[in-house]
Image (cartoon, rainbow, N blue to C red; front, side, top):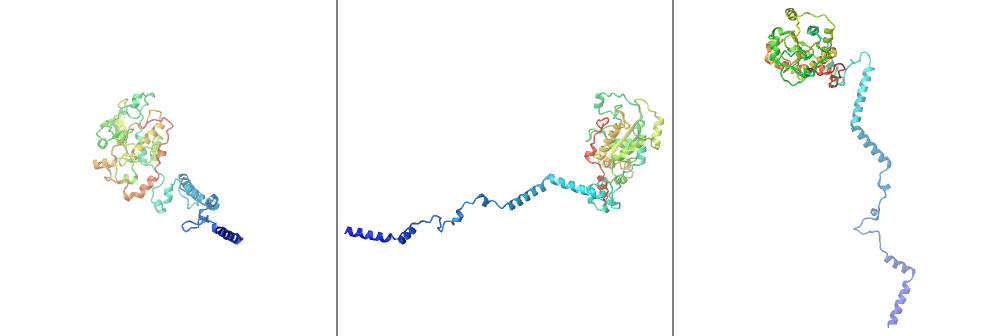
Length: 367
């Protein structure tokens, strides 16, 4: 019985050993290795891409780099400054090669090129003419006292009660203000000076109104002259020192005739500066006159040794003493009716760096 079963198995094995059966048997034993199950992903998703396949094309990468570099350069401060310089150069070249009819006046800034021609027509002229009266009055106030000793002690220099040439103390009572280098006087002191309450101690005095002409015409202190630019101060001083024709002042002539100059007790010649608030324009022009006076004299000699600043400016003086104003009015610098004139005058003012130019001769503090 067992022999018969073995013979039957042998016969089946012999039949299955045919090439067709072997192929079918091998195909049944095969196992798929690429994971084509419903839950698995297709074989191409399991491939690891090479870096060449991951990186974008060369032309796309270069275009993106150029775009990013252009954006960075455009937003950089250096590039913005270069663009502004190129625009300014274009404006200069266009104004230089323009025709005679279209030629622009010299000294125009970039803000003026942005303004309309109608606005430019309303601006004041570029040259600030000096009033002859101001030059005459400065000539009358020039000190002709003999020069003090050339050697000045350090104690005299540090003494704030002395005038600019260290020859004597200040005549007017000085009050503390926001400008340490200048000597401030109150509105009451200036009113007493105008009314002659200082008597024969004052030979002559001058009040310099540093406001713009429309402010000065709207109301100013009686007898004040209008000098609102450094160029006007310079021209007036040069005319006074050059011996221009001077109109004698009756008050000064009477004082000089009755009180001849004596050593140590000579009458004073005073100059008082002010603007609207005496915070910027008045102090700047007062300091400029002192620097200019230092340049044309041998230290410590001065033509105008006694300078003062009106504390509170014209606004405070007009509020306290309107009867001493001629005309009796007050026009603010930023008045809306004079806005165009204000812009025109402020365009011609020197910048802060130009005002801080070094002094080559006899450099010293303002006092």
